[in-house]
Length: 114
Length: 112
Image (tube, rainbow over the protein chains, first blue to last red):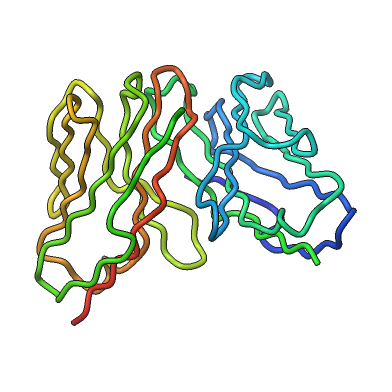
């Protein structure tokens, strides 16, 4: 059974650009959540999607957005990139997103903003 | 607000010794407490979890204890091995959500 797949694994952007990251959950999983990991702030929750609806959002500016498709795949977008957006972006999926199921994380997309 | 404190930030032990990592959470509505292990270049991997209706859970060399009254939970690793070396994160979440509040992580080093 394939795990959570995130693409791209590595990318470099410059300030002011925008970026889109993709996440394919484990087959059958309907909930996808996103986290930002940095050395200074640790692991911080970005947003959570279930059945194409955003159910929860963390304390990030509006430049961070996401969506989920009918096949449960998810994308997150960061516009007008800043140096501080350099981070490992992690996607996690679970069966029902009810808090009763285990979250499985992908390997992450490492974004470097120059 | 929601917060999870984790200690220590680094922990060095000799192979075969035990390691203990402690976490404290602030949200009294939290009812799910997973522990993740993250190795270099990989995403966090769940190693054990506990729910608020249970006080202790064990899986081979790993155990987790939960004190709801004190809002503390701890990870215990016995008979440590070099492959246990990694960063460990505790987390807490409420019912009906996948939103995890993570601790700041503990870098565990097991020396042969």
